[in-house]
Image 1 (cartoon, chains in turn blue, yellow):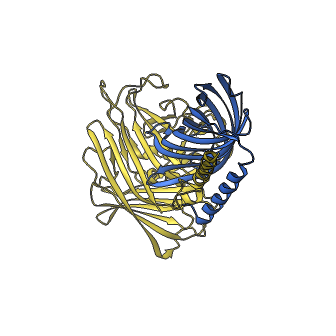
Image 2 (cartoon, each protein chain N blue to C red):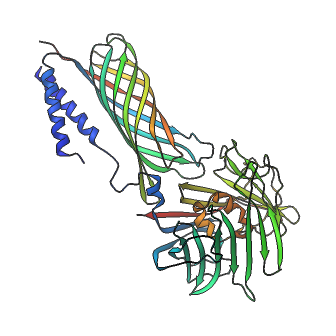
Image 3 (spheres, rainbow over the protein chains, first blue to last red):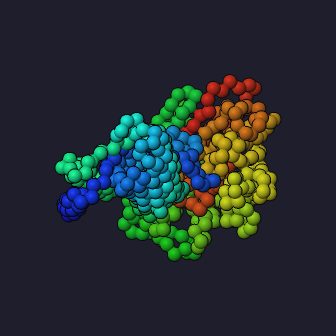
Length: 195
Length: 346
């Protein structure tokens, strides 16, 4: 699934960035969130009501300063349903991996609102009469959220809402091409002291 | 410091590896053209009936014709029949809602033949190698079905319907079948049945029914057909369609068809005999009838292949739908359903 060539390039990049970090020491935060996504029907003559997916998300951000962070996220579904007008739902899976740029309030405040802009790859699969249908799309999106400070290192991301626009509509689902997400979870700051 | 190096490096490496992960397998279907080239392997026929549930499976066997047969009688279409699909149909139980017009119940084999462009040429129903029902399709050069011939081998003489399909050339239902001119062998008569259309939700959402398109509900063989989707769920548009038949002294019967279709492929087709109409938007229903009977029709299996196949299957309810007889009072606790689940393979 992952080629050796790819792994080598990843390793080299990681080593390079780690050595760069000796001269500049950004702080990291890692996050774990639950995500609920919905792809609404956007066609009047659709047999489909909507698609709902529940996922977990892991992510990490490098904090360029206390207001701006750049990171990546990985979202994998654990439950997904394609809901039809007159039928039992069909099961679906989704995988999203991407990068995001987050602008937030200062770290010291109890309430820390933020907005983010993201670019991601969205993979979606559904079993259809014994075969697997699959769609892969790039997506750009934006969102906003609110964190509450629980301790010096720990934040509770109470709610985050996101909109993602797919560049390749899901071809078997009446060309659904956007999704809405609601997320909640925790963000942990890994503090790093400078020399 | 060292901690950061380690953590940052590991995190970055992990992120990159995760980015290379995928849930898409090499044999997944990733385009509409791939999807339309799949083979139908089996059809599970599930009937949810008042008398209990019935589930049976029809098995399909594809074969390429060894010698393509040029079969178009008028030679108006350049094409050969290149493929035959043989379907071993399950035996028909005595309480089955889905029956065959010829009355056959076992040893049933259906042979469907197709042109090289994928459109069906004929659907032939056999009982122990004896032809019992024959349905034949004819097209114009635009791929529109122009003639449809149904022959049921009943005794003492076969019943033959020879239909000419006339397409609307204007109005909301431009390109849809507006009428059928039917020649019947038994009575040697010619009947024209005109079908009304309307729009649901928006102007591109066309379906059978009275309304914007004008026209009245057709009457055929003593039945008045009222097409529409008021028995479907709210906001169904034309994704679900139905019909109410009324006859005799105010008796009425209803069905709705709910398909699941992607491209030309049907995933599921459900026909529901709607007896409980109280929660619908249709208002009051007529005097009750007992549960209806549905007769096999090739469009039940091939609906997805035709232009506006949804309307065609609805139109041919004049053949496959047989309403139950009038009863004095009803005590229905459920709507009966016949569901075709189509299973595909590469």
